[in-house]
Length: 272
Image 1 (tube, helix red, strand yellow):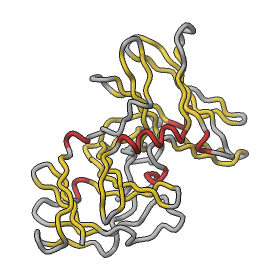
Image 2: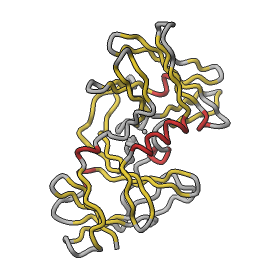
Image 3: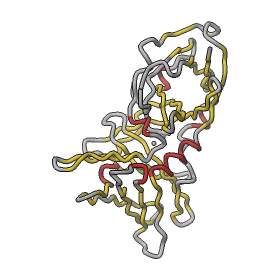
């Protein structure tokens, strides 16, 4: 099992990384959380329980309205009179970060973050078209403060304004747009996202059919995440899971233990 990008992730998620023989690596995560960079197993102690045999029902949340809903309007720009939301995600098969550009009511374009990085001798820019208007985009990487790295989107028409967001701004916008859930008196954000693959050239290769469910929270000033594939959560029983906390300084199993079931299109969350 592996973490989605949301965010998305958040689903919850965008990022980019570059590594050459004579340059140190840089990882620029402009998705909802760096916590979604991995997708660990749900915990060796995971088990199935009969309904009514584990804890009590805390939440029943309809999933359909939440699908890819964390693509925040706060990180968007206008292309003519069409709003374009900017978000991040990580490919399911090769784990590379992508930037997504989604028009309201239209299709989404993805661009590989590696091909957008500006740092030191690197000068990588992608070019794309949205509703008949051409754009270029790049990530201005800050190796000493990755959260200050900026995604810049520039229209090729010089009379039109450019748009730019720091990693921190993009992360916070996606987190705030996700669905709030309280478990054991602690606030989490629920991301429900579609997973996608990339091809051998590092280009978007379509959605895989998998959907990811992620819970994110703040711990020690950092965003920490927990992930499950929707297909792994049963309808007839409760999955009791204590997955590793991804993104924490001390990633460990058991920081969150919940029961999950999908019933009638709703995610049920159980807690002791």
